[in-house]
Length: 185
Image 1 (cartoon, one colour):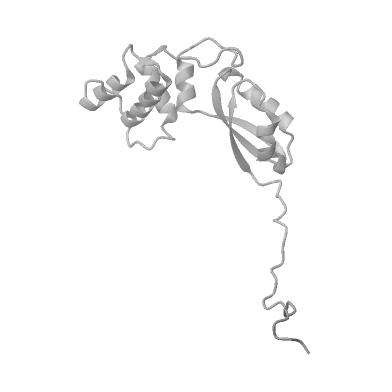
Image 2: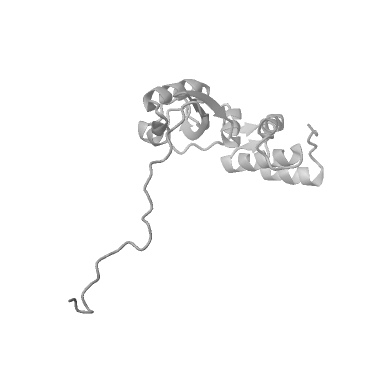
């Protein structure tokens, strides 16, 4: 017979859970993938592959589509929405406040590999800021357009440009005081 100190044989007290594979991917399902890329350039396969590889798409082909869609935003960071269905990707630009402010500065195109740490010291008109705010209205949490304009002015301040020759902070305080009028719509 066995001594009481000998180890007991392992008996399963509870049933072991069955390990199952995740459900098979449905190709007709619409999947949105957001990715931040340099405009007009093919993003590296290493950044695309983990996001779209599991969906059964070629990173090289999707990268070429992204480069074609972002040609007008050459050299700037832009956010791109990939709408993936049936192993096809449709590229859609998602406007961001910073990229729209930098584009409004109308700076010459630059090669990001040669020119680094660019100071955006240009000037933007208040009308352009209001137009950008109208485009970004759907993303804003502000109740009125005036609040969205102040958000875009904050972005202009962080970019480093001036608005109507003044600091964006001065224009923000002018909006608060009522000195600068912003249309309702």
